[in-house]
Image (cartoon, rainbow, N blue to C red; front, top):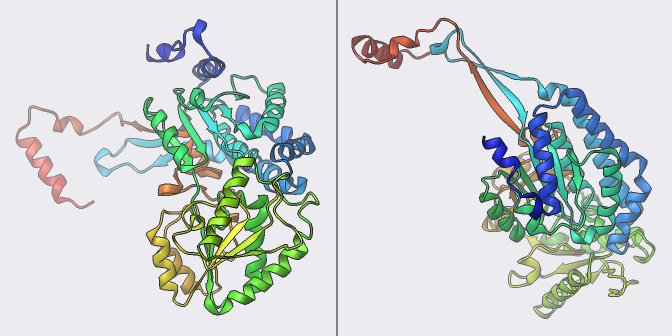
Length: 479
């Protein structure tokens, strides 16, 4: 009866589109609650092929939504990583789906234990605008591998890509399996009684999503963000560190949840780092109007970033334009990459996630001070250290906590399919990617099978001498 109530909870005459599709997907789940290996592989293969066949159209739609984004950037960071993720899941799915044998206590000798991964049902995916393809396809790969049905809500700033994906996915999938929902409001979507919700976005909105999910006791995966610190140690080559750090920071114009948010480097290396950064960025972006530097997503975000720069400058920070031939351009929302030096904790740039092409730089004499600063603040989604000293690496990792870590590079822990990706504390909860994503969207269901002969009846009531003797034996034996 509980299932029937769930299916019929939205009266047909008052249903909105999201409710209609949820009802259809839930019915499909009840009709086929455990899709076969072949069905799941076919779904992953179809999604992969959609991306392979439509790379140029997808990259063009993303660029149109941003105002401008390099086609190459979208292909590398979104399309390729998404395709690679589907392939990774498809190749390993047979192993993941196998029931897991578990040990049996000696007190239940002859019985057996196993854990069966079963689909949860209907998964709601809420994706942001900054990586609008990858942050749909990453969760989708994990959820489809686990055998679920999926509904996707994309950001309003991703309307062109959303419409394209709606058409492409709708041509290959019935909406009872995968549905992209253009135009659906967040309040209509996140209040639905999904079997699992994954949200990627701001911490503030994440709290709202979690409150909505709590109404239905829906489990949530939250991928948020935060101020991810980067540390360059004394022993590491400065030019190599700068080259890698600046690529991770300024791809997508810094609009990346795992972007390096601020940098700590040895006091003696500050001016050398500034000059190195200028040379590197002059080679990479001689003209930010040439189509290879990404626009800020919208006017309000552009205004927020310029206000952040003004706030820092008014409080004594030094702003260094790394491509001085280019000035901020509000019409195209192109904001040149900047270093911001001599920053203080009273500045907005050190209090809020930047999400733009601004890199605050601080110096240190004692690494303990850096670690103390990191520990005093919210736990970030990423932490980045440039050092070849294994002891120092171990010291930094064990004295901090973050969603993930990249050593001698930045951000690319998110691109490792065989490692879980997720936040901790203010940067999120739960994991996906690879096997951890399969587990996240599965009910890992324990199954105990009793042996046909068991001594357990000796412990049944009425309790007396036999029970007392056996209980004393159980406590005494250390098996």
